[in-house]
Amino acid sequence: MCTALIEVTLWMAVFAAAKTELIGGFPKESYLAYAIWAAFMARISVSWMYEFRMIEEIDSGSINHLLVRPFTFFEYYLSQMMGYKLVTTLFSLIVPFAVSTAFDLPTDATKLPIVLLLVFYYLILVHILSLIVASIAFHLNRVHSMTVAKNLGLWLLSGELVPLDLIPSPYKETLLALPFCNAVYIPVGYITGRLGIEQVYAGFASITWSILIFGALSVVMWRWGIRKYVGTGA
Amino acid sequence: MKKYLRLYSAFFKASLIADLEYRANFLTRIATDIFWYLAQIVTFETIYRHTNLIGGWTVEQMRVFLGVLFVVDAFYMILFHDNLDRMSERVRKGELDLLLAKPVNSQFMLSCQRLGTAMIGNLLIGTSWLVWSLSQLPDFQVLNLFWLLVLIPSGLLVVYSCRFIFSSTAVIFTRSENLMYLWFQLYKLGMRPDSIYVPWLRILLLTILPMAFIVSIPARSLLFVPDYALFAWAIFWSLGLLYVSHLFWKFALKFYSSASS
Figure: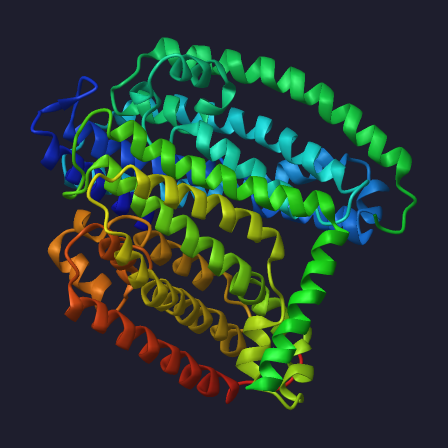
């Protein structure tokens, strides 16, 4: 909530000095709604805890008890993460929704189901990236900082900091072509009225091709790591 | 004092050796902070394409603010971050027993034993950005840089003391991860100029929760007419907070009942 408060005060200060009703074609309320929902979406669409745990399992060798079970390491942590995210989403959704309603900020609640579907679909991609980073732990010690670097990179590309449509060309087009804007910019833009449904459909498409590409890479990385692993911790 | 300096020098050497042993980790940590710097720069450069002022600060002044932020953050990461970040884990694993038995101040040992030497690269990057941003100011007074000699340490003391108090709660509650999240949220308040906040929040950030001391006050010393009373208050209160952190540590230790407390 503090993140949202900081971003809200920032946008209020921007509009107070800008001497204009609109920035990038949108009023102040649109940016305040964006700040509040962006903080919420950004929390959902990131995986810190489970990626750290995956790395820890490989580092310590405790992965052995998972390797002998009748499901994959990927499935085990995907189910845990999705369950956790589902519960936290349902509970924390109340906060941005209540704030938007109380301050009459532009938010279309009927768009929430498809937006949450998009974010949860994006989480599959996030988890594949987690598996890629965790697979590196088979070869190197101390890869936790890679998680931090990767998540900061994704955060930068997600649109939490500023709506991506404010960024000048050609950077804007590049960022929108990547799948990572589906973490924050596309879902928040859609529920706050900046974007249409076609961008959401394009988001589903971009996540799909990314899952295929990164999924293939994760399989290669995982097999390479498992071949090297001797069962006593990396 | 000599003993502590010798100890600190030994900590530095040991940390450097340990960091260089894991070279991929060493480089990734530098890359991580570069992403973080980029995020801050992109945010403000993008917003300034649509306005000339934010909270009364021009884009050139905001670049200086970011420079100070990068430098303070790099110092904090080098000196304290690794130690305070794993304090909760050390308490849980019972490592605190060993530290408390040593003939040195336990707060010093817990806070300074490990240095993030990889972050020295980030300090260079942050300092370069600060120097560049200052060179863009048409009326910058070089003598104002001397203020940084006291105001950056004062900001660091605030970050250290507040974070240490939060980390010390691990001794009382054993697990304090959620309180750490609260700390990060508070720290974020200091990562924006104090003038963007509403009056009541600004007063709070200059008094009880002095997050404005971390970057805003040092940046103001470079950019605006010096406010001696404010600077004196920042120095006094940061030293006061250090003392408060010491008192809190002694208080927290009363709850410690050895390993896995």
